[in-house]
Length: 203
Length: 109
Image (cartoon, rainbow over all chains, first blue to last red; front, side, top):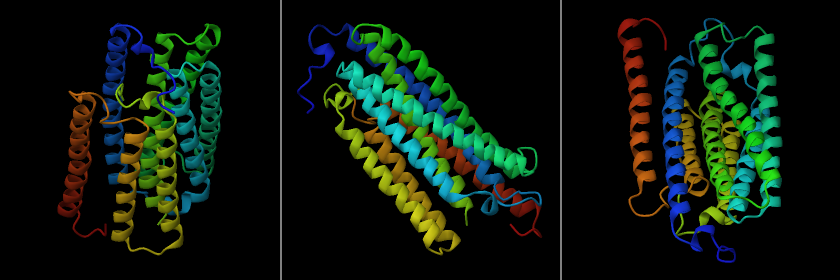
């Protein structure tokens, strides 16, 4: 499976490959800085998660099956993003478009479910300004949601030129690789949110 | 990340492996929390272990951590970042617990 398609940079000297690895490494460093940002938000949430100021605790607010479904949807979108990235490397344009379109749709469902939950909380009188627990919750999960929103925007912005060009250019492969890394990083963060916010809060 | 030697960038297989492992881990965590009555310490330990394995599986199979060629800058920067994150999270919890303990001795925590 992996030897059947020649990798692009094998056919001629290294210039593109070098450029490619430099860009993906730079993007990796951005992801690492985002990792620290989320680390700080996790620390704030864990410290404040019991400070409900007389309001309902996490246990009564969260509906675990709902969040579990959301988690599964986002995990599948991480898989399709990975498959899309691999298809881009294989220069398989149709599959690239298909998989990233699937990622986009699943991402829209995920973010819709998330905003629905935010709405359920705040319309039930449990908005971000009600307690330290809710402030920390909305900050952590909201920051993740904003990342996903920008990811969705990014998918559209990247897919349009891929749609228009003939084949897939080196530039597009590089950009799509960064997008895939970003999306799968968001999935890791979401898995940690599901574990440490929802599962931990449910007891 | 950058893995011209392993061919993982163009391969579907690691993505599927990562997906299956991560799906099994998340289902396990969910079922354990929902169906079993755990004490708080045991619950925290279970979630921490499963969460750690989850993150590790996704970092390796999805983000191809540590598979790049020799200088391993991706891995080195990751380890440094993980160290910073551990200091930030662990340090915050430690100092805030101490504050609670020292300043509000009568409050149940």
